[in-house]
Every structure is written in structure tokens, then in C-alpha cells.
Length: 141
Image 1 (tube, one colour):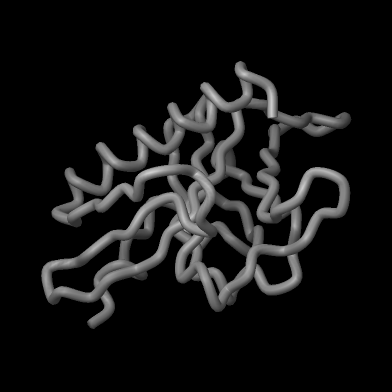
Image 2 (cartoon, rainbow, N blue to C red):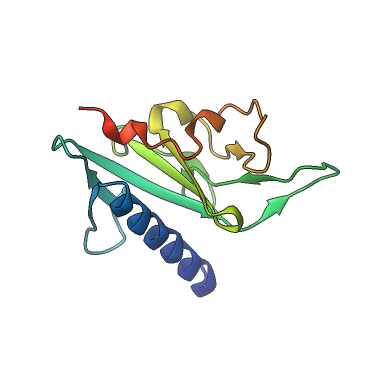
């Protein structure tokens, strides 16, 4: 991973940490970056969630009037492997240009390595749009 890419990734993580605190969640950041999750999040009931944070700053238009965004919900650089949902509970997708978070239960991404998000369209029927700014997955007890 290039230094610039790593810097963006860290920025996305800290954007999430700030927002999670604003949502009355507690964030625990592990030492090192070798784990499957970027942080642990604890809700008011004491439930802890293993969270992987992904983000993008690149819109893809491809002859579309409304841009869409894609994250890499996978591990590995050569062979992309979907995130292991036995090690991650929630995947957070951060769309940087729109400052929008998608809080997606990992199992909803099962076998998906590149989900699409449509934050510019309030009428979008995209599969993951129900998770746009939806912090409810963290509220479960």
C-alpha cells in the first residue's frame, strides 16, 4: 500500500472514530494494523462490535448522471478475498466527498468484494442504501 493510500485510509478511520463518539459509542483502537478489524466499538449496553473501516474518495460516473462509489470490502492485494465475517461484525464504508457513512453488518456483504454506494441519489434502490447514515446496527444489545 502506498504512503498516500495509507494516509487516506487512516484519515477515513479517524473520521469514523469522531463520528462514532458523536453517536455516543465508545471506540477502542488496537495497537498495530495487522488485525482483521480496525477498531472495537462498544454501545451503551456494553456490546462490543469488531469494525472494519473502508473508504473512497473516487466517484465513478461511467456515462451516468449520478455518480456512484465503490469500496474494496476485501483483503489481499493480488487475490481479493471477501472480509471474513467471523472476524468482523460491521463494515463501515466512508464516502469521503459526501462525508457519508454506511454502517453495514458484515453478513450483508457476504461474498462481495466491491459493493456500490449511491449517496447522491435519495431515491436509490441500491442494496446497501438502507445502511446510509444508519447507526442502528450498533444499537443492538
